[in-house]
Image (tube, rainbow, N blue to C red; front, side, top):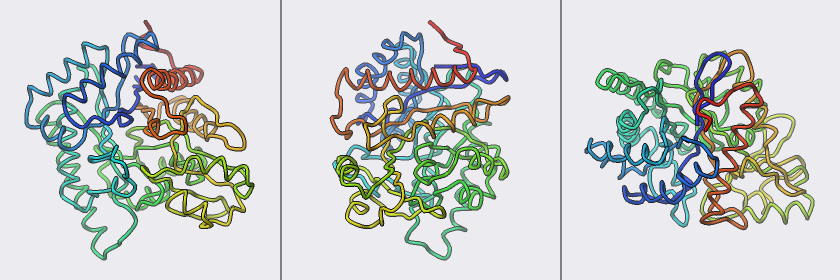
Length: 387
């Protein structure tokens, strides 16, 4: 789905397919038929965007077989789907029974992460629509915060230099530009925009920047306006934005609130929890730890649990949808577009309390895209590809 910003920028809107568990080529094609094409039909759109998640073995196979890339591109075209962005954060096994901290490996200290990301960029050049200005790939914020090592930061700097060199070579070889965005996330080496500004200060900004996930921004209790100003001051481009909402609990000591939020404590994904203090938030690495007394419950909690952007949670909980709206307003409501790739990323649909399946999931994803589309048009963007 494409929208036009008043400054003339084409803004691509997609949903991220890491919500689906397929980890081979046939499974990817099957999910296009079972979910993505029906989502497009629900929206009555001639074309919608996908933020493809491709597990590492699929990426390696596609990277070695140009014919397979062309076949995937043909499957997308046939169904009215397009891809300008890949989510390369999860490496593989993202729908295993328990993922938790495994999602951060390999990290950017390991050669496999560089090789995988450059392979994703090469594959993306074969999937990009001919009229797309560029592609984007999102990746993890360098590494989980621990264990630290004296030489880790120097090793990371060298890896990012090699990444920029690799992206420049891909552009020279293919004529297509792909940029990579590092996605701040609670608990990682880069959790906040302040840490991004400090730790990514030597990035080659022609090729590298930030992937701004609005759920993560909210969990860190960062206000969108100052956070974006901080990135602008550091000259860090927002390569990609992930439109997402967290769970907010105003009074976590209240028994009814604790009972409601306990329904979100599940075993597959990590749900980092942060308590507002008026200063730096208090932190634990997972929601069960918070509920067991790891946080004092004297201030509001925000939980890294992506919930559908179009739905409000029943009291005493709420979603951080107001914070998402504020972020989109700061990014795209002014005279110049500050991002041009927007990906709705609610990978937690399968583990939500009362999780929908089949057509229910199609309806849910279509609802998220419709809400985001309408929010952007309310900000003054216009649909480029209205039916």
